[in-house]
Image 1 (cartoon, rainbow, N blue to C red):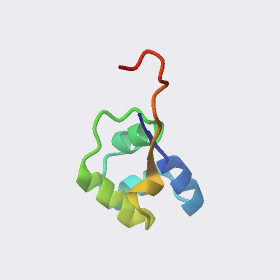
Image 2: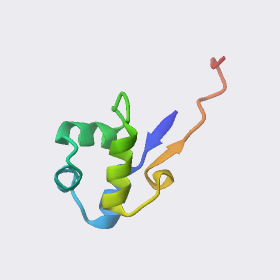
Image 3: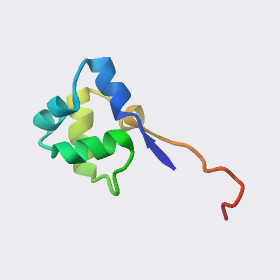
Length: 73
């Protein structure tokens, strides 16, 4: 599964979700969904905007965490 670390990056930058939404042009509900991991899809242009504003790499705001091996086929 992919876990998002945007909240961590925002905290490190002293920025709020609202400020991120304003600076990127991404709707606040979408920014919130990304921060909570509830986002259904993550367009590349949104990723580009967030990385630009936060001055980071994609790996800084998301990571792959393997699912538990039990029951995964």
